[in-house]
Image: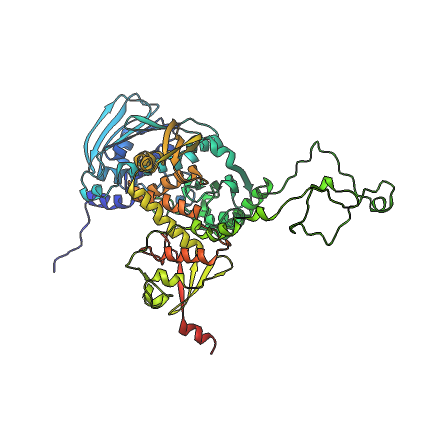
Length: 640
């Protein structure tokens, strides 16, 4: 039998490795910029065209490469960072695997111009698909100039699965931000299609964070600095009042390298547990300095997963450091009475008050006096004498209460104005494991579910749940979720029927977006305008909110806009439908009745009727259960 095992050609092996190392244009930017940092660069300029699909250029003023090194750098497992396996546990550089340049050259057309400081001439090298096309001596400045063109030109399947330009540019900006945040002593610039997106001069760490995310963030940061024999942790934490539902800036770095670490994130989140509302996130920028021998970065080619030898001990140190910082800066809200300049209040001397000659007059009380009687008289307190005799002024009380009974009876119609009842009613599901039932089966026989529910006596439990007897058992409805679902459908119909009216703001709000969020915002500006938002750019990632959709009084426009941008960033495309869903849900949640609000039976009837007119009354728009039915047989089993 003939042999069937063969060595793969280098070009094929490099393409396989590129599948892990080079996943998108952002991966190329990350690898080339990290190489520039390892080369000792003090200035790094990045320029991309068509979100990196057409061209990525990275220019640095590092130490450059010799003619031999320039050629050898594109071979697999060729690196200047390590010499033996033991060096993996003493890493002080960003790269070490020797795969990045070989992987890039395997799936793109690469041109390199590099020169060392001592050399009079540099080297120009051209490679496409792992094949060297030319190499010659040229005159060029000190450092390296990489130009990567037509990424995945020879792997059309990979190129086809690249996302839109806005999404790919956002990924590039996200990688760029992570590198810039951990190297404040290096000057960075980033351009896209000849437009400068970022210019970050060498500066201190706190100013670098503000340069990336805006000066407004400076007011929200608390400094943290803790040194132990095991780890040095420093950086900044967000104040509890700056927590947000989406878009929090959360960064961990270790020895100058960005990392993802859910376990350490849990330590930070636990410290904020009772300081921020459930479901909200806090911002943090935390930097760890540890002995390289105590961590392992050689887990994944992207090097964002890092294993710590003393993970549990560092978790406890981190948790204590965060709690101590929050306490030291009085992040926990407290009541502070401003008494400066106010007169002192003398203590009460009971003995003097009871027997002293200057005892104030005591007003006598008439236990038979009824202010609501028809012939009652009332006067301001100043008209009472020390004997308690009222002045002759009279006030008729009964006219003051005319019309209150009518207002109480019509209150239920103000809570909801349900749409016309449809003949075809949706199904209502019982508890888990049971089959859906028609509304007629739930409420019993009758001309319609609406008329049946109108004849039903509802009960309210703890101001949050509506209990009603149905044919199959006992139905329990979460009144807030039911009202939210009803209002959501009303808002969606308004959005679908016409262009939302915009309401001008008397004092425009300002909102700042990070460089990674700006392209996404630009891509959905038309959708936001259709909803009624009016945004104008102010430069540097800042925008003025000049107008908002009519009818969202009480909502925070800045939170709404940032939430929509984060949703669009997660979806990676133009998501007008998703934005409309988010806005309608936000409006409905804001306008819905709150837990603990007491409802009359008429109001509960109106709520139940409107709920069952919806196509999907069982669940809220975000998938939460609205109602549940306890089966009659289950109730009977409880008392056997």
